[in-house]
Image 1: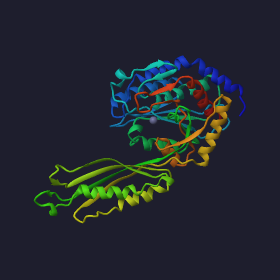
Image 2: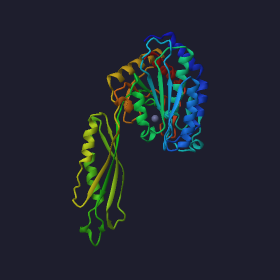
Image 3: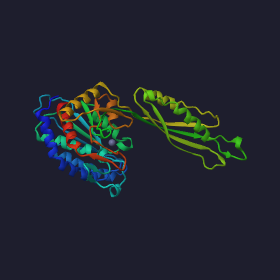
Image 4: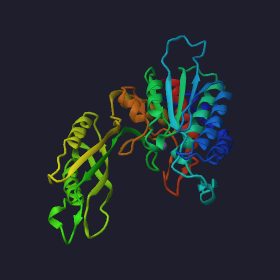
Length: 388
Ligand SMILES: [Zn+2]
């Protein structure tokens, strides 16, 4: 795609707006929003809602009892657009963070050496600010585009338990989904594939006995669990992109007691949707080695993988062309981490992820974004919305 007048105009506009973007970003970062604090989440959600309203969006909140209310902002089709039945584009993101209230006192918002720092700035408050400014630029330039739906959920960092159905309902009728999660690594890769995620819990019950007096009468839940763990780690298949990680174990009471109880929590990742049912089946058919023990397996795959479909590859190619016109060399990457893009992709909707901030330190104390990339990435998002 050649550099059009629009590309340079968009970029100029986004560059002029950088101080304003940064100012809004500071306000958004300074409204802390941990996934488990409804009051804090709702405060930020309402603030963001008013920002989208100011751009002419119809804002609705999807009320939740335990999570923060999810935010949906609809930008209607422009009346002059010839194709009245155009399917919307979904801009997807989340406004919760992994950081508890009070983190700001140790990790305040600051700008230093071309970076901006703060809790949740990279994952993914900058992405939300980019949505606002990309849409604003298009509006100010009077550019026609498809209708846009913005959906921001409040529990992504804890598995999108309540966000998932809302996202799936919104994505169903969309032409494409653009996910404003941070890009991958400081090189700013876009994400065209993500692994699916599952959680399993293995609960073993044995029989307690005195380790000195009645050893033979006991059935050790710890020994049984250990054998089961060796079994489940055989499910790992690196070539197929399947990993099984027993991340947490508990069990036993005292050294002189044969353990009656033991439990393991296991993280599972899969690269292909088709591997999910087989793996679930394997977990649920585990049998105790020791007939004096019972095992109970719960859990399953809760985020399907985002596979690199033809639709996603096409979106990436379009992004790459706009990137080139804006002076960026965009590359793609896959990641083992999941996002809400996994859900929309599993529905068969072309989904491109990692369009948000360039930076580093998600969920870490050095969380920061590269300021120089902010206007270019925002212009890229605007160009994508315009051309899809
Ligand atoms: Zn995120």
